[in-house]
Length: 348
Image (cartoon, rainbow, N blue to C red; front, side):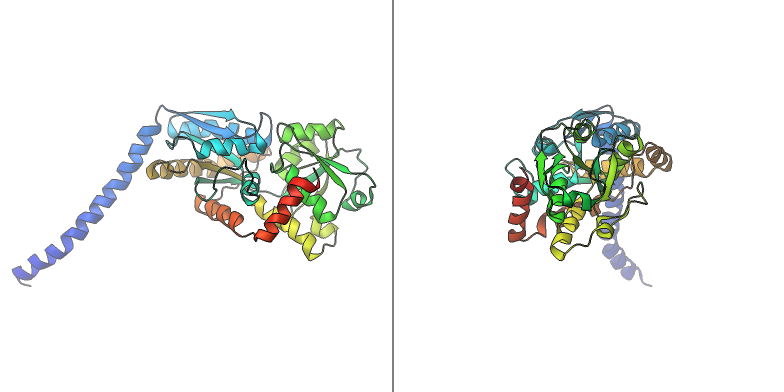
């Protein structure tokens, strides 16, 4: 091999080698910059409901673990309003510094955008995603002494069944409306409760007949003797209610009836989603994604959460964003109009 050939080869290789070396050194530096940024700062996990509910409990369990992971002070801030949409609106237009995130109700967030609600001034496709903490089936609960033992009992009632919720698209009210539409029930939505725990209490006190909650929250209410599960309103069995049939196993549904249950089930798959303001610097997003994933997949933490009946099944941030984009983009205008009528007018 001649000296001339070697010089030519080196000239061809060196630019690429330098680029690779630069890229390799830049990634750790960016990560280090993000780590330095968060060190000693205060980070907020915003919950769009009042204290005491399922979302609030999850956030308060996650906060101290994330605090240790990033060396920052992590606090939980409750911002109830419009079934959690108020907090999403605020986060969407917040300063994109990466110092706040929300543990959002993906169902309510997706519905708000699908329905084009005036108080849903955000675009789920543009948020930065940290992942999904958990996604689970939702259940229909009543008081233990309720006359509603089965879905068929509800179908035979000659009076409206009242459902508790905080806002029209909060996961509670819309779940009740979808159940009523799918099973062709006489219903009335009673909204204005501060969150899932407040809505559930209204059922226990006899103010309302039914509440629609995630199986994790339902497990707490049922195991304490405060409520009884009527049906699992999805196609998938609950890990907490393994012997409770799904609505598809309990009732023969037409294609149109099945659409409503499946539509709601698709929204449920976005679950308890962690997201932050659009435009947060990429290195900070990547850093927080890594730390949050580490927290939510750490075996001891997951086991402890399961013992507390707060199920954790982390879903990657990329999957979370794809799920959100699919939810808000797959509904036809005609079907969107029908959904809006059922969820915001028919049972109010």
